[in-house]
Amino acid sequence: MKAAIVAVVTVVLLGSIFYLNGTSSGSLAGAYPYAVASPGVGTAAPPIHLRATDGSTFDLASLRGQPVLLFFQEGIGCESCWTQMKDIRANMGRFQTLGISRFVIITTDDLSALRQKVADEGITLPVLSDPRFAVSLRYHANQYGMMGTSADGHTFVLVGKDGKIEWRADYGGPPNYTMYVPVPNLLADLRAGLTKAGGRARA
Image (tube, rainbow, N blue to C red; front, side, top):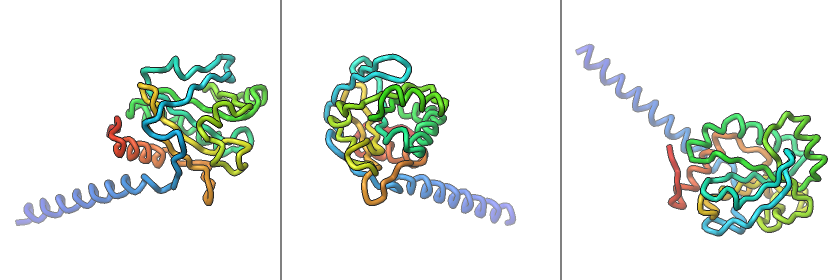
């Protein structure tokens, strides 16, 4: 009799834990509201050809065949944006479970100033400089920041293997002007967006 009671209690506890964990995980998606600007999901990603802080010139077309996560951020004065970058880099393994191995950062700051900032922050990833807004305007990434249209906001764009946009989130707009999204929430939004679009979402 005691064994049966213990078994029932164990099942109930395990069920409760599973339910709570599932609820917690599910609640992560959508916790940080975002807009979706144009170009959106299903649209061919506009070309990107920009100089990077490591001395290279980045060409989005050269990465056709592998998913690329673009991160348009406000720039040098936005410390939370740089924290976001570091946290994503530290958790790249979690993004790789979604098949994302390339992470590209874009700001409208001058290249020389960006090089100094990257050195100060100890950033090893190349950061792209778009001072003339050549790319930012094509992606309408400067519509969602605290600086109005004078800088990019906090926009993520996932470009798929075929060169089309698979997911997009513009977090930086009013009224919240979100400049940092915890990695678990960002991943949850990404998974939810890919699932909704019938994309490559994985556990």
